[in-house]
Image (cartoon, rainbow, N blue to C red):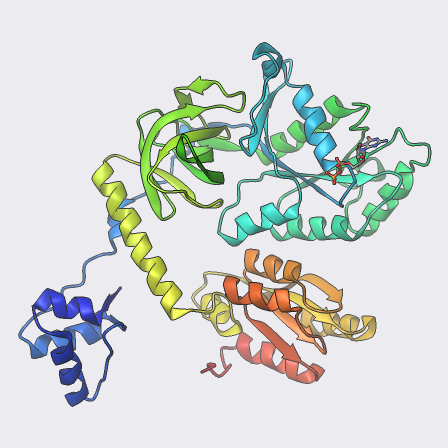
Length: 477
Ligand code: GDP
């Protein structure tokens, strides 16, 4: 916990200038806007006859979380994201799935775009779909620490086969440890070749069940609405294997998946409930803001009073617009909610001021040492296939019992924005060998605070990683 020098001065009723002067005399100079730790504050305060007491972090007291006991857990519907190469039919598939919804027919077929929707099958089972297809939204959510997707549907056009973004989607799903159900689309086309797609996927490690693997594959036509029910059955089968459960009977927690400022209604956001039951009137914290649920709507635009796990709802009643990926936590008092939001805003300002690198080799290994993580994720880019293969094999050999090296992407060419986003989402570092980042990638790396390391000599790269693994890397100044 830290405090700003100017705030410390205010609390003690002394001028900032005086405090700074004293700090100079003591040989530990500080500036007015500097955030100092409790120990430094204590030494300075002592000079003015004050004692510093370390208060526990507000958020920790206010948001005490008791994980549910196994008895509280009940099955919940799966949340699905559709990914795949551009033009392979993601949007068409999401539309086709929507049209299979029996509840929508009851609701008169009118559906609202709120960022996610639920589909009810004939037998009453429910699946929730995130309405923004592609791995960009998926990854930017993950970069913000949010994972709402349980299953990825990978759409591959049967005429086109596996393409660049198909591979990227697989990497993203794998990095997130989310299982993939494959939808081979456009089987109505004369030049469709589903068998070729299957062998391409098998080469990438997605071996269909019929070939002895464990990847579920459906042949579909999103446009002609062939095979959609079968695909949904496979999704539910995959969900069953995941044994998805959540507690229902407790205050709600969830994630913001979309938000906007509506001219008439003010800040509006869609939340996917992940635990508990959300009720109208509930007070909540969401990212840097807070509020009270004034009204809630489901994906048909119906006003509803409660929402249970995996159900997306549009909510009115935010003080400010939250961001996609923000957490959403119901608390018992408005005062508490406001305090937490203010605390988080202060923290965010401090972090912004400190411009910390979120992910660096040194940081990762601090975490490794503390046992917080057991894997080192690397996004590797090189100039030629030859060096790439050489680097891949030497890096993989560095894995030990304690630390696993995971190369989550290995590619040729400049470091792209997509590389940086994948790294950010997966707590990875980006390593470039004889390659540079694109200007865009550079900016995103800065924003996302991701470290990019450059090398042009193989042994230096290996050496750095090795050193870092035993905690010997010299801190960067
Ligand atoms: P996205 O970029 O992945 O979202 O792809 P779209 O859903 O926009 O589809 C791209 C194009 O493929 C559109 O012209 C669709 O009509 C067409 N398309 C999608 N699914 C099928 C299908 O099953 N069969 C055929 N013949 N065309 C399809």
